[in-house]
Image (tube, rainbow, N blue to C red):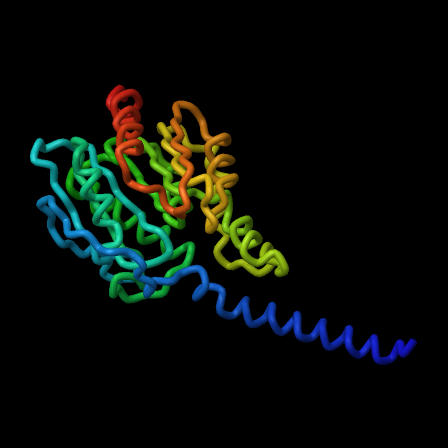
Length: 272
Protein backbone atom coordinates (compact mmCIF):
# COMPACT_ATOMS: atom_id res chain seq x y z
CA UNK A 1 0.00 0.00 0.00
CA UNK A 2 1.33 3.40 -1.03
CA UNK A 3 0.96 5.33 2.25
CA UNK A 4 2.68 8.36 0.79
CA UNK A 5 0.05 8.64 -1.96
CA UNK A 6 -2.78 8.17 0.54
CA UNK A 7 -1.33 10.90 2.76
CA UNK A 8 -1.03 13.26 -0.21
CA UNK A 9 -4.64 12.61 -1.22
CA UNK A 10 -5.77 13.14 2.38
CA UNK A 11 -3.91 16.45 2.62
CA UNK A 12 -5.36 17.60 -0.71
CA UNK A 13 -8.89 16.79 0.51
CA UNK A 14 -8.26 18.67 3.77
CA UNK A 15 -6.93 21.70 1.88
CA UNK A 16 -9.95 21.67 -0.45
CA UNK A 17 -12.29 21.46 2.56
CA UNK A 18 -10.51 24.32 4.34
CA UNK A 19 -10.73 26.36 1.14
CA UNK A 20 -14.46 25.64 0.91
CA UNK A 21 -14.97 26.69 4.55
CA UNK A 22 -13.09 29.94 4.01
CA UNK A 23 -15.03 30.65 0.81
CA UNK A 24 -18.45 30.01 2.40
CA UNK A 25 -17.44 32.05 5.44
CA UNK A 26 -16.57 35.00 3.21
CA UNK A 27 -19.87 34.97 1.30
CA UNK A 28 -22.22 33.77 4.06
CA UNK A 29 -24.28 36.94 4.26
CA UNK A 30 -24.98 36.82 0.53
CA UNK A 31 -26.39 33.33 1.10
CA UNK A 32 -28.52 34.39 4.07
CA UNK A 33 -29.80 37.73 2.78
CA UNK A 34 -31.15 37.51 -0.78
CA UNK A 35 -33.10 40.71 -1.50
CA UNK A 36 -33.10 40.32 -5.29
CA UNK A 37 -35.09 37.10 -5.33
CA UNK A 38 -38.67 37.91 -6.29
CA UNK A 39 -40.66 34.70 -6.51
CA UNK A 40 -44.19 35.98 -5.90
CA UNK A 41 -46.91 37.42 -8.08
CA UNK A 42 -47.33 40.72 -6.30
CA UNK A 43 -50.84 41.71 -5.29
CA UNK A 44 -51.99 45.31 -5.30
CA UNK A 45 -52.95 46.78 -1.95
CA UNK A 46 -56.72 47.17 -1.68
CA UNK A 47 -56.55 49.39 1.40
CA UNK A 48 -55.73 53.01 1.93
CA UNK A 49 -52.06 53.37 2.76
CA UNK A 50 -49.24 55.85 2.97
CA UNK A 51 -45.75 55.32 1.59
CA UNK A 52 -43.27 56.24 4.32
CA UNK A 53 -39.53 56.20 4.88
CA UNK A 54 -38.32 55.09 8.28
CA UNK A 55 -34.73 56.02 9.05
CA UNK A 56 -32.48 53.65 10.98
CA UNK A 57 -29.58 54.74 13.18
CA UNK A 58 -27.22 54.74 10.18
CA UNK A 59 -29.48 57.13 8.31
CA UNK A 60 -30.67 54.54 5.79
CA UNK A 61 -34.22 55.18 4.58
CA UNK A 62 -36.31 52.03 4.91
CA UNK A 63 -39.10 51.95 2.34
CA UNK A 64 -42.32 51.11 4.18
CA UNK A 65 -46.10 51.30 3.91
CA UNK A 66 -48.47 52.37 6.68
CA UNK A 67 -52.22 51.79 6.88
CA UNK A 68 -54.20 53.83 9.39
CA UNK A 69 -57.38 52.05 10.41
CA UNK A 70 -60.45 54.22 9.94
CA UNK A 71 -61.72 53.34 13.42
CA UNK A 72 -58.78 55.21 14.98
CA UNK A 73 -57.52 52.30 17.04
CA UNK A 74 -54.09 52.27 18.66
CA UNK A 75 -53.62 48.56 18.01
CA UNK A 76 -50.93 48.33 15.36
CA UNK A 77 -49.40 45.29 13.64
CA UNK A 78 -45.79 45.72 12.53
CA UNK A 79 -44.60 43.15 9.97
CA UNK A 80 -40.96 42.17 9.57
CA UNK A 81 -40.46 40.13 6.41
CA UNK A 82 -38.19 37.22 5.56
CA UNK A 83 -34.82 36.99 3.83
CA UNK A 84 -35.95 37.24 0.21
CA UNK A 85 -37.69 39.76 -1.97
CA UNK A 86 -39.22 43.23 -1.68
CA UNK A 87 -42.10 44.34 0.55
CA UNK A 88 -44.50 44.06 -2.39
CA UNK A 89 -44.27 40.27 -1.99
CA UNK A 90 -46.16 40.67 1.29
CA UNK A 91 -49.01 42.90 0.11
CA UNK A 92 -51.36 39.91 -0.11
CA UNK A 93 -50.86 39.33 3.61
CA UNK A 94 -51.47 42.98 4.42
CA UNK A 95 -54.72 42.84 2.46
CA UNK A 96 -55.87 39.86 4.52
CA UNK A 97 -54.72 41.29 7.85
CA UNK A 98 -56.58 44.54 7.19
CA UNK A 99 -59.83 42.81 8.15
CA UNK A 100 -58.82 43.12 11.80
CA UNK A 101 -59.31 46.38 13.67
CA UNK A 102 -55.69 47.50 13.61
CA UNK A 103 -53.21 49.79 11.92
CA UNK A 104 -50.59 48.10 9.74
CA UNK A 105 -46.92 48.90 9.20
CA UNK A 106 -44.81 46.86 6.78
CA UNK A 107 -41.13 47.81 6.64
CA UNK A 108 -38.30 46.66 4.40
CA UNK A 109 -34.82 45.89 5.67
CA UNK A 110 -31.61 47.73 4.86
CA UNK A 111 -30.34 46.42 1.53
CA UNK A 112 -33.87 45.35 0.50
CA UNK A 113 -36.52 47.00 -1.70
CA UNK A 114 -33.98 49.47 -3.05
CA UNK A 115 -32.80 50.58 0.41
CA UNK A 116 -29.16 51.39 1.05
CA UNK A 117 -27.08 49.48 3.60
CA UNK A 118 -25.94 45.93 4.19
CA UNK A 119 -28.11 43.54 6.22
CA UNK A 120 -26.78 41.80 9.32
CA UNK A 121 -28.26 40.50 12.56
CA UNK A 122 -27.37 43.66 14.49
CA UNK A 123 -28.46 45.80 11.54
CA UNK A 124 -31.89 44.18 11.34
CA UNK A 125 -32.40 44.65 15.07
CA UNK A 126 -31.61 48.33 14.57
CA UNK A 127 -34.05 48.59 11.64
CA UNK A 128 -36.78 46.96 13.72
CA UNK A 129 -36.20 49.19 16.72
CA UNK A 130 -36.30 52.20 14.40
CA UNK A 131 -39.72 51.05 13.16
CA UNK A 132 -41.00 50.70 16.72
CA UNK A 133 -39.67 54.19 17.55
CA UNK A 134 -41.47 55.55 14.46
CA UNK A 135 -44.74 54.04 15.68
CA UNK A 136 -44.19 55.35 19.21
CA UNK A 137 -43.71 58.84 17.78
CA UNK A 138 -47.34 58.57 16.69
CA UNK A 139 -48.41 58.14 20.31
CA UNK A 140 -48.77 54.36 20.10
CA UNK A 141 -47.26 52.39 22.99
CA UNK A 142 -45.45 49.06 22.77
CA UNK A 143 -48.37 47.52 24.66
CA UNK A 144 -50.55 48.33 21.61
CA UNK A 145 -48.17 46.79 19.07
CA UNK A 146 -48.48 43.31 17.56
CA UNK A 147 -45.17 42.07 16.17
CA UNK A 148 -45.38 39.83 13.09
CA UNK A 149 -42.25 37.99 11.96
CA UNK A 150 -41.99 36.05 8.71
CA UNK A 151 -39.22 33.41 8.59
CA UNK A 152 -36.02 35.45 9.08
CA UNK A 153 -38.20 38.16 10.61
CA UNK A 154 -39.16 35.78 13.44
CA UNK A 155 -35.61 36.02 14.74
CA UNK A 156 -35.93 39.81 14.89
CA UNK A 157 -39.35 39.67 16.54
CA UNK A 158 -38.09 37.23 19.16
CA UNK A 159 -35.19 39.54 19.99
CA UNK A 160 -37.46 42.59 20.40
CA UNK A 161 -40.18 40.78 22.33
CA UNK A 162 -37.69 39.16 24.72
CA UNK A 163 -36.67 42.62 25.92
CA UNK A 164 -39.99 44.51 25.88
CA UNK A 165 -43.67 43.79 26.44
CA UNK A 166 -45.86 43.92 23.33
CA UNK A 167 -49.56 43.30 22.76
CA UNK A 168 -48.97 40.02 20.92
CA UNK A 169 -46.51 38.08 18.76
CA UNK A 170 -47.15 36.27 15.47
CA UNK A 171 -44.40 33.98 14.15
CA UNK A 172 -44.62 32.49 10.66
CA UNK A 173 -42.18 29.68 9.86
CA UNK A 174 -39.90 30.39 12.83
CA UNK A 175 -36.50 28.78 13.24
CA UNK A 176 -34.85 27.77 16.52
CA UNK A 177 -31.58 29.45 15.58
CA UNK A 178 -29.67 30.27 12.44
CA UNK A 179 -27.12 27.70 13.60
CA UNK A 180 -29.76 24.98 13.36
CA UNK A 181 -31.10 26.30 10.06
CA UNK A 182 -27.63 26.51 8.51
CA UNK A 183 -26.73 23.05 9.83
CA UNK A 184 -29.81 21.68 8.06
CA UNK A 185 -28.72 23.13 4.71
CA UNK A 186 -24.96 22.73 5.17
CA UNK A 187 -24.46 19.65 7.39
CA UNK A 188 -20.86 19.25 6.20
CA UNK A 189 -19.76 22.65 7.55
CA UNK A 190 -18.86 23.73 11.13
CA UNK A 191 -21.58 26.39 11.03
CA UNK A 192 -21.58 27.06 14.78
CA UNK A 193 -18.01 28.32 14.41
CA UNK A 194 -18.55 30.09 11.08
CA UNK A 195 -21.79 32.01 11.51
CA UNK A 196 -21.67 35.75 11.99
CA UNK A 197 -25.45 36.12 12.45
CA UNK A 198 -26.82 33.46 14.79
CA UNK A 199 -30.35 34.67 15.64
CA UNK A 200 -30.67 32.35 18.65
CA UNK A 201 -34.43 32.49 19.11
CA UNK A 202 -34.56 29.29 21.14
CA UNK A 203 -32.54 30.98 23.89
CA UNK A 204 -34.86 34.01 23.97
CA UNK A 205 -38.39 32.73 23.39
CA UNK A 206 -38.98 31.83 27.04
CA UNK A 207 -38.44 35.47 28.01
CA UNK A 208 -41.51 36.54 26.02
CA UNK A 209 -44.64 37.08 28.11
CA UNK A 210 -46.93 38.32 25.31
CA UNK A 211 -49.55 36.04 23.69
CA UNK A 212 -47.93 34.09 20.84
CA UNK A 213 -49.33 32.64 17.63
CA UNK A 214 -47.01 30.20 15.81
CA UNK A 215 -47.76 28.98 12.29
CA UNK A 216 -45.69 26.57 10.24
CA UNK A 217 -46.03 24.28 7.25
CA UNK A 218 -45.33 20.67 8.18
CA UNK A 219 -43.64 20.00 4.81
CA UNK A 220 -41.50 23.13 4.92
CA UNK A 221 -38.17 22.25 3.27
CA UNK A 222 -36.44 25.55 4.05
CA UNK A 223 -37.11 25.91 7.76
CA UNK A 224 -37.94 22.37 8.94
CA UNK A 225 -41.23 21.99 10.78
CA UNK A 226 -39.56 20.65 13.93
CA UNK A 227 -38.07 24.09 14.49
CA UNK A 228 -41.45 25.82 14.53
CA UNK A 229 -42.84 23.09 16.77
CA UNK A 230 -39.90 23.51 19.16
CA UNK A 231 -40.38 27.29 19.29
CA UNK A 232 -44.04 26.74 20.12
CA UNK A 233 -43.17 24.24 22.86
CA UNK A 234 -40.66 26.67 24.40
CA UNK A 235 -43.15 29.55 24.32
CA UNK A 236 -45.03 30.66 27.40
CA UNK A 237 -48.80 30.62 27.69
CA UNK A 238 -51.04 32.05 26.38
CA UNK A 239 -50.22 30.67 22.96
CA UNK A 240 -51.84 29.18 19.86
CA UNK A 241 -50.48 27.18 16.96
CA UNK A 242 -51.49 26.61 13.36
CA UNK A 243 -49.60 23.68 11.85
CA UNK A 244 -50.76 22.75 8.38
CA UNK A 245 -49.97 20.10 5.78
CA UNK A 246 -48.51 22.35 3.12
CA UNK A 247 -45.73 22.16 0.54
CA UNK A 248 -44.84 25.81 0.95
CA UNK A 249 -42.18 27.39 3.13
CA UNK A 250 -44.62 30.12 4.16
CA UNK A 251 -48.13 29.28 5.28
CA UNK A 252 -50.87 29.70 2.68
CA UNK A 253 -53.17 32.59 3.54
CA UNK A 254 -56.45 30.71 3.19
CA UNK A 255 -59.71 30.68 5.13
CA UNK A 256 -58.49 28.09 7.64
CA UNK A 257 -55.59 30.31 8.66
CA UNK A 258 -57.76 33.42 8.85
CA UNK A 259 -60.24 31.52 11.02
CA UNK A 260 -57.50 30.64 13.52
CA UNK A 261 -56.17 34.18 13.51
CA UNK A 262 -59.65 35.48 14.28
CA UNK A 263 -59.78 33.18 17.30
CA UNK A 264 -56.34 34.39 18.40
CA UNK A 265 -57.38 38.03 18.10
CA UNK A 266 -60.69 37.49 19.87
CA UNK A 267 -59.67 35.11 22.65
CA UNK A 268 -56.17 36.34 23.45
CA UNK A 269 -55.50 39.80 22.10
CA UNK A 270 -58.81 41.57 22.69
CA UNK A 271 -58.94 40.36 26.29
CA UNK A 272 -55.71 42.14 27.17
